[in-house]
Structure formats: structure tokens, C-alpha cells
Figure 1 (cartoon, helix red, strand yellow):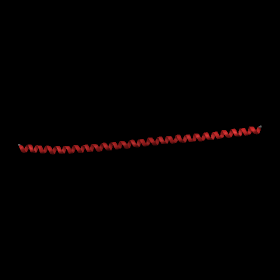
Figure 2 (cartoon, helix red, strand yellow):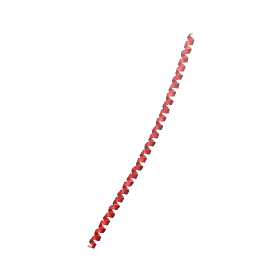
Figure 3 (cartoon, rainbow, N blue to C red):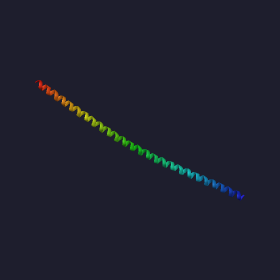
Figure 4 (cartoon, rainbow, N blue to C red):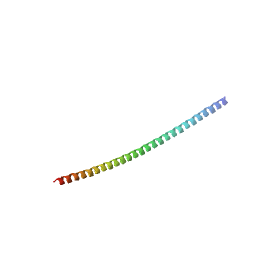
Length: 96
């Protein structure tokens, strides 16, 4: 009878130890997944922030380039207008 009790206690304690070990392994795995998830979130937000900065810089470059082109067009138009105006004035003066 005592032998059966000892065997039962050994089996029970082994089962409890085994369950505790598996519970610990599950907890460690869960903690690792949580930590990896947090690292992934940090990486994703960092990448999105870098992408946003690059897009903002690209928009600024395009805006600056467009403004320069528009200024060039206005200068060309002003120059052509001045030349045309000069020609008209000179023709008017010749007719007088």
C-alpha cells in the first residue's frame, strides 16, 4: 500500500513538474512572440516615418523645380513681350 502511494506521489509530482515545464515553455514562447511583435511594430513605424520624410522631400524638390520652370517661362515671356513692344514702338516712330 505504501509502495502504491509512493508510486502515485511520484507519478503525480512528475506530472505536475512536466506541466509546469510546458507552461514555462509556453510562457517563454509567448514572451518572445510579444517582444518580436513590439520590435516589428517599432520597425514598421520607423520605416513609415522614413518614407514620410522621403515623400516630403520629394514634394519639396518637385515644387521647387516647378517654381523655377514657371519663373523661366515668365522671364521668357517678359523678354519676348519687351522685344515685341520695342518693335511696335520703333515701327510707330518710323511712321511718324
